Image (cartoon, rainbow, N blue to C red; front, side):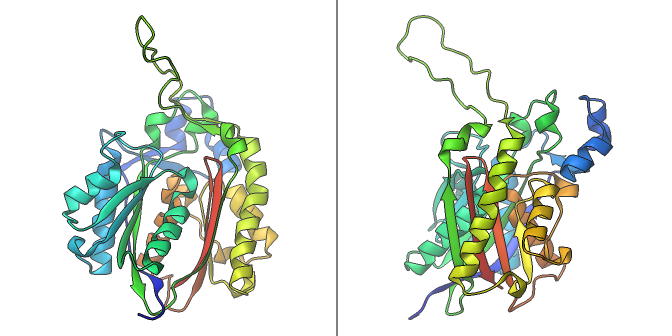
Length: 327
């Protein structure tokens, strides 16, 4: 190919069966359905019971490959975006690569939390445009329930588990048109879950036990960050493509909070029907959410050839980004 583009050719998702409803949370923590819905738009979220992150990722990946009519042996690269891996090593992506039998694919995990899918799409696009990969499987998978304190109503009402995936392929047709990725690490403390304590490993006595694994969030600070970061990223991809918001068929944003989705809708004067929403049914699934939305839209026939969509992720890191894709 003289001009290599990156085309979305398949999607898949796998969500745990257990639905943790607002009513169920009322018996666990000081909250109620009205309070949760008013502040977040969430009515239920999925919880993975005795299930590893890699297991969710594997099934979502299988379903995406089936949708793309692609065999795992044809994959050149597998990227898994996750903030809740099962092991330091092997990575979730290597577990998936082995289980799928994707014998010629390289594999690595990407840690960008809620921006994990848009970051991974940018990386996949870069590999394809560089001629280093033809077929790329991008998966986002999270078992956030493992790092949630179910006595902390500021976090336990928000987050859920799940996995979703997309397959991207080299094409003479332009699919991923523009991307814009950024981070602001100075605000990293606003959304934090510690994995290991900082200590002297050679010190005498027993090793420290980490008691800070639960996610802590300064919600108002994260919201203020989002209010400027998301329009910045969306404006950038629209400007790069010489397009305006009214030319976009769908805005598919990270499902963090319904108020953020409403903010973007108002900021660009959008028809609310152009902003896809499923946070009420799944909660905030971190990097999974955008890929999950795309899979639902594809399965429902809402994504049509020739449409332009803007995807955007934002959150832990703090990270943010957007991409403009032609279906």
